Each structure stands twice: as structure tokens, then as C-alpha cells.
Amino acid sequence: MADLKLHVNGAEMQTQAAEDEPLLWVLRNRLGLTGTKYGCGEGQCGACTVLLDGKATRSCLTPASAAVDAKITTIEGLEQQGRLTAVQQAFLEEGAMQCGYCTSGMVMAATALLREHAHPSEEQVMEAMNGNMCRCGTYPRIAAAIRRAAWGTVEKKGAAYARG
Ligand code: FES
Ligand code: FES
Image (cartoon, rainbow, N blue to C red):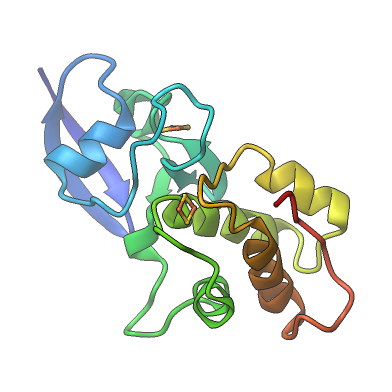
């Protein structure tokens, strides 16, 4: 075990972690940030997505020790003073979840996308969201939420992330 200092959601957090302990387990089990989900543990589903310096990152594959110099953002860190982000609000308004297990990772991936491309092309959405799986098949509503967050309304031309 080693001491670990992480910068999470705007705060310095101290904990301990085993060598190579995945960031996912440090966030969930040591820091109590259970909004980040464990799906496959192999980088294949995106449920564990967090932002490292704004970049969507699989926390199940990232050793916590590799994140000490990064600004880590989890789903708990998006809302500010009771105000949801545009992406969070759009997911709610579009009902872009069923069981909700994938939602945290979807929101984080969409957040990273829209921070980089405020009005993404269809290709950019597909590329950014392609690794995020939804077992409930809510892809059309997730696509609508991303369009709403990017364009303010689903009617305007935007990206079409719809595999389901
Ligand atoms: S739990 Fe990390 S990608 Fe599935
Ligand atoms: S809403 Fe159930 S896995 Fe996506």
C-alpha cells in the first residue's frame, strides 16, 4: 500500500492504494464516489468513464498512481451548486436511460466530446461514443440527448448516434 494524493472534482483527496490499483476501485471503494460504475473491467463497455484533464478515460484500466498529476472529474463533479450541466439536463429531458447503469459513463463521454466539439458531426459523435455500451438499448435517446445538449433542441441538425 502507498499513500496517494489525487485531485478529484476540484479537491485534493488523500488515500492509500495498492500498487497498480485501478482508479475505478480507488474512486468507488476508497473515496466513496460510486457514481462511476464497474461494467466489464476490461475497457470494453465505458461504464467506468471519468475525465482525466478533460479527456474521457476508462478508470478500470487506469492505475490510480498514473492519475496523480491529472485533474480527475467524475459524474459527481459535473453539477455545480445544484445546477446540472447541459449534458446531464439533456439526458434527463430525453429520458436517455432505462436501468441507468451505463448513464454515468455515457454522460462523461458526451461531456468530453462536447467540450472538445461544441457542435459535433455525426462522425465525431460516433467516434466519441462508440466504446460506450448500453445493454438496455437506449442509444436513440442517448443520441437525442447529445443533440439536445449540443444544439439546444433535437430538431436542429446535429449528430446521429443511434445504434439501437
Ligand atoms: S468497466 Fe471499464 S470499460 Fe467496462
Ligand atoms: S440504460 Fe441500462 S445499460 Fe444503458
